[in-house]
Image (cartoon, rainbow, N blue to C red; front, side, top):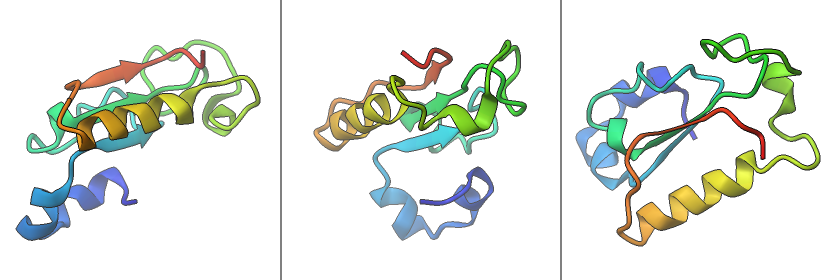
Length: 96
């Protein structure tokens, strides 16, 4: 796992091995290097200060709240990419 800023600092060898990028509270994914844009799922919880137009909610601390599917949805996105079924850039704003 790396932060969005670290993606641009990875070696070409490491970049070539990445099949999916999962972001939490990193806006709409527009800050992702072009090489990773179509491999990214950007999760923006309601109330997250880093997400434009996020609305009201518990924000960045809510990604692990009971009843949310942020992690399950991200895991399915990664699994699909790993299996050669990339879904392109996805912006997720709903916890369910």
